[in-house]
Image (cartoon, rainbow, N blue to C red):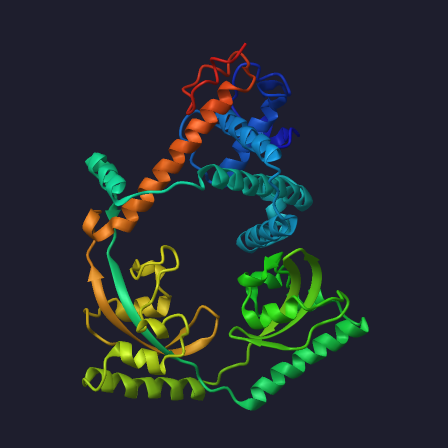
Length: 448
């Protein structure tokens, strides 16, 4: 963190010895000092964010800052950097979220007692350092492997009160049908995009402003349509093919159709195998009658499934237009853990409402839902399994326990690395700040 002093925050806290001193060095780690103002500022930030501090903040926070400095020093050795555009995008999203929550920029400034540029600068540093530290940790733990026998031994050694409770989960199959969209609606969308492109190409309008005003990609519109640096594999193929072939940042691409809708794209910068672009997304509107036609067709399909004419999975393979599930018998996959099991809150809201009172084997009536491309589609779902809540066990929850063990191993590696780093690093903790039960060993031993 920066060593700047936030006086309004500083004078608002009970403090350790020396509270009448405006600022002072409280720790030294290597050749870097940790100031009392650093601790007070982080304490204020954590309170603002409602963070829970486990222990005395004047012990926990300086140790946390010291640990960050050790990781950041290692990042310099390993020449680890992060993309500024990615950090900037994350900060903009966070600030926009706060503005939406509090109601205005002025209320955000009043809440944090800082100007918006100062808040943004602080968040940039925090998020940049967090991303760098994450990369260092990934490098240190990249070789973690596990065997079934190790997982079993780990589980057997867990105290009973450490065995997690697994909430009720469900397994679901789905069939979706996209409603027909009139040709005129598609033509209207394309005409709007051509108009935007012409205005930018003539110099009559700014692409970023148009994206903020009109783009239906909510995640990027507030950043002027900017996506940040991305590799070809992270973009859908149709979009990537156009984005990577752009060469003039002053010109706008042709209209690109993808599963998300219709786009125009503007190049910002190419860097090696990555590209940063802006885009404007428009999605054709679906009429109520088109949605009714789609659900009527699905209701007919449901009757045949319930009547035994064919199985749900077979129908999904032939009829469903959900590309993520149609080749998997319609089985929905949880993106959090790549399993077929969902807690109810992890399902799309419309799906969760339908299956809440269904029994395994039931097939829902047709309904309208918004899919992960933010499009309205017709759908039917089958509840294939409902797993009651229970204490985790190896037979039902092996993947969960495996993840717990891998996390345990990674934490062991990081703890051992940190304690060795502490041992090899000059550390001084000032009187009055050293009487703590620190998380990591070696801080006080090396103090002068």
